[in-house]
Length: 471
Image 1 (cartoon, rainbow, N blue to C red):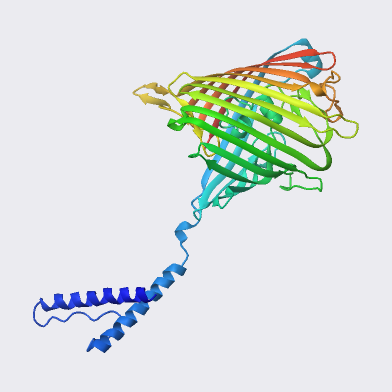
Image 2: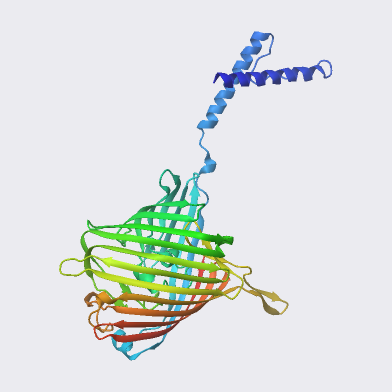
């Protein structure tokens, strides 16, 4: 403090001396203006007193500046986000066994999703997201991503708390705006644990090439009242580790490796069920293809491995899934398996971008958007956007639940017994990107199930399309 006062006195003294010297060189009769906070200086004692007074005023001003809150670091203006999906599904054919057991699967066209939300950040370290949507069947408002995060927490890195997706792999965690096809692959959807209330920690290592996610969630879905009720909630412990040893040009050249593990437990046994559907199921117009029935267990362990390679226009993605469910009472322990492979190729010179902060695809990098324009009397097109062809094969194994071959068309889900077996899905499709936030998806799907003790073979041929915009 003494050094600060000495420095200020020296600066002020030099300033006063310079002012006096300048005044002497001016016209006769010139008198310099009086200092702002000092009386007329008549001798050295008065000069010292004036300096002391001015220094005290400057110190008070500096103190007030430190104590005043910095409003520039408050919350930023929220960025509005949302999405609108319009789907159309046409069941072109079902074999005889599928018609007998599944009934006549109905075609459907409608609004698949409509969501609105906002994102923002503030106070240097915080960010948040709020998002609500309208449920396609119940016609009610549903909570989606609603969380707040804080960066650079000692030992914990980036911490997030709220309602968001459990990270159960690559395809399911990317969300419906960034996956290649209309739907999550069948095994990814079967193993997915949806959104839960929880808290998580995220770390980046090795120049952000390695990411570690650790989270703990409640093992109960939020109900219509936006809350989780009951003593028997249970927990989900979720770990996901990803690495990008080869990464260049925003992910145009990429090798992604990863794995995840989930321990799902309950406070006392609670029933759950798992199912599959044909690879186009978003409008919810038909019964499950395979179903475990409702079974009780104390805990389960699930996990998987991730692989993704991208070299310019070409991409290959694959995951392996496995799950082990504990025995309970007279019910034996059971296992569940799945895998998929996806091949993609951009007909145009474009590619999907990759986000190191999430370990996921994050969008599409396009050279030219779809741009129609008018020239005189003619409507012309300057650019047709980006085109991506893709193929998927998905396999889900529920053999441990193999049981009776039921008629889904006359049996309610509440009364159905387990219908186990295995399912193969083949998807051939095309993405037409009008711009990075608007695309039109076209798909042909062949879904085959081998179910029941009699190993009955069912199959469906489906044509589907979806117009998808997000902002």
